[in-house]
Image (cartoon, rainbow, N blue to C red; front, side, top):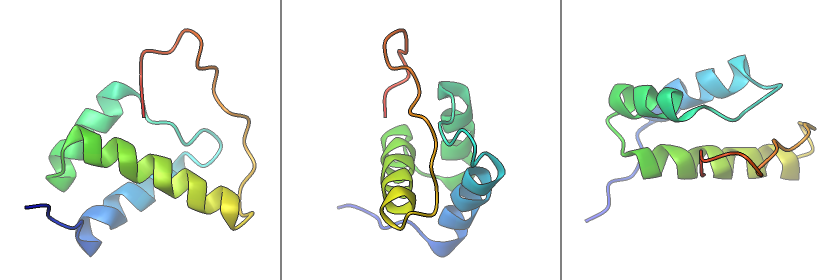
Length: 76
């Protein structure tokens, strides 16, 4: 059974996101650290960030240049 993210865990992720708003792509190491802190899986953290970036873009709150995916092994 899937557990929903709590307000506490998402507040940690939101804090990271807004601190890094110019480049909202955490590294694999940062994702691992955030997963441990929030008690979420790495996949959940990656998905949360992908959705958060999509929401920001949709609300037109943010414009950033997408990172170069070519040499990147850090999937979302």
